Image 1 (cartoon, helix red, strand yellow):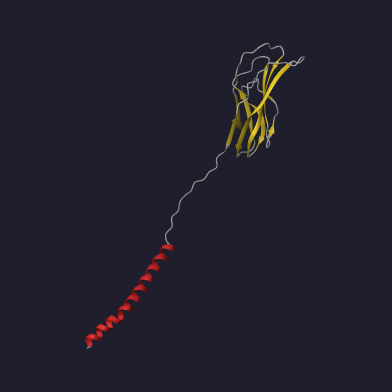
Image 2 (cartoon, helix red, strand yellow):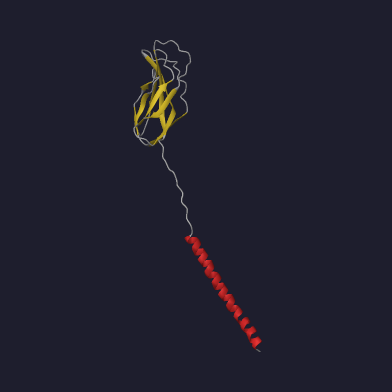
Amino acid sequence: MTLRRRFVYVRASLPIVKIVATIVLAVVTTGSLLAQTEGSSVTQSVTIEVKPITKISVTGNPSPLIIDDAVPGSDLTSISDGNTKYNITTNLDNMKIVASLNDKMPAGTKLMIELSSRKASSVGMVDLSGAVTPVDVVTGISRCSEVNQTINYTFAANADISQIPTQSRVVTLTLTD
């Protein structure tokens, strides 16, 4: 009879063993989860920098500037075009736009340029005829972004010029300090 009671005793304690095992497993799992949330850490070095930005771009090209008519009594005949636009972006102060030509204009002619600006000072109409070295066209540019600003070109010839064959000039615009 003692054997039977022991067997009953073991059998009766089996649910208690399951409960204790479940509690122990829950405590171990919770401890592991807490250890993971307290966890480990790593560090990284992030390098940052802002470099000087000086961007200028143009859209379009001026139409051919062809003088084929004159005003009676005028010493100078001219034609203009304002179809070209420019855009600038800079994060610097005291910038300017300068313009130059790749070659001088023929004697008795002028090529002039005027750049508009909402955030700086346009110099107005500037004669580029002999400007193989850069000349100022917009000054006082500081940390800004401007888009769709007009570029006006004017080509003029003295009334005594009879004919000049078709030629091209390259105008270089530079955003600089």
